[in-house]
Amino acid sequence: MQRPLRIEYAGAIYHAMSRGNRREAIFLDDGDRHDFLKTLGDACAKTDFAVHAYCMIKNHYCQTARLEKGPSMSTHGKSYG
Image 1 (cartoon, rainbow, N blue to C red):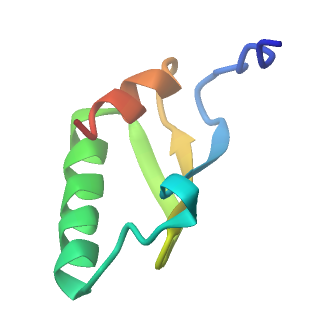
Image 2 (cartoon, rainbow, N blue to C red; image 1 turned 135 degrees about the vertical axis):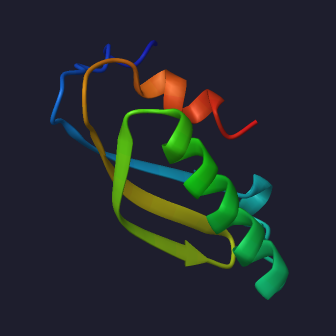
C-alpha cells in the first residue's frame, strides 16, 4: 500500500528521520556527526529549507525543517547525495 501524497506548500514544517539498517549505528564518532552537519548545511543552502531542530542519535537522526518557498520536499532529500 502506498503512503498518501505529501501536501507541500510554502511555510510548511516537516518532520524527517532516517534510521540505520537493522537499527545499526549511523554515527560512529564525532567525525561522522560533523560530516552529517556539514552535509545538512550544504543541502539547506541548495534548497529552500530551513532546519529548525535536529537530533542525532547513534542509530538515527530526526529533523524538523520549514519549506520556505514551495515544493518540493523530495528536492531536499535528494540534495544529501
